[in-house]
Image (tube, rainbow, N blue to C red; front, side):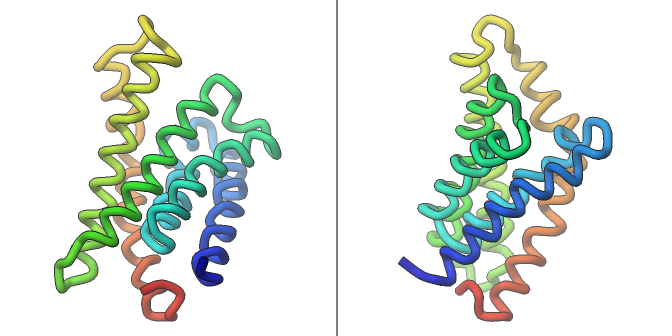
Amino acid sequence: MSTKKLVVTALCLALSVVLPMAFHAIPNAGSILLPMHLPVLLCGLAAGPVYGLLCGVLAPALSSLLTGMPRVPYLFTMMFELATYGLIAGVFIKSCKNRHSIVNVYVSLIGAMLAGRVVYGLMNALIFQAGNYSFAVWMTASFVTAFPGIVLQLLLLPALVRVLQKTGMVE
């Protein structure tokens, strides 16, 4: 167990509670800018798959417990989605072997974002909204409404990972 990884995970968990609170001051900002996704993806990229998975499961649960967001019906879908983000980002960043670290970060980030959205859609279609969920609803929620958040993730997270690498916080 690495102290640096624990610190990064704890920071990401704290951010996963604070960022949504700040973003939710703007109407619909949560579903548009995806503030909880940022620290979970960062945790997976910076601390690895196990810590990313734990952060992804704990972030929505802790936020719901402390702030009431996300609400219980949506909480479980988010736990699966965010756990997938953290896990896959960590797995991909460990397995990508391109000599340009920025390419590894983008491949890992995009792979995790796609996998998380697929899990989100499957959980809704098969369990949490079975019979009331369609491909069109999934596409709209996952890509159209969330487009500004996706852009924010693609711009901000590689820069943050690079800063953490330069400071020695992550490999």
